[in-house]
Length: 70
Image (tube, rainbow, N blue to C red):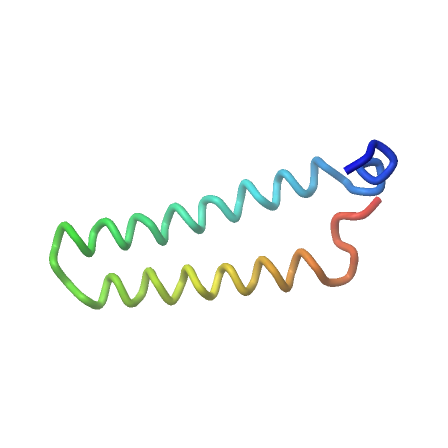
């Protein structure tokens, strides 16, 4: 983006949001790792569903109501 386009966004709020989302993705990956460790299918299903749900939430939340614009 050009500098004039970057000035339209609240970078601090966007960075805080992305940081919190990364905790959610790490939790999903933890469940997927525990699935391999304990050989259970339900941990994989929960982790995968949470991953897909979080991804849909992030796309909708970040692209509605101009939340990160100044």
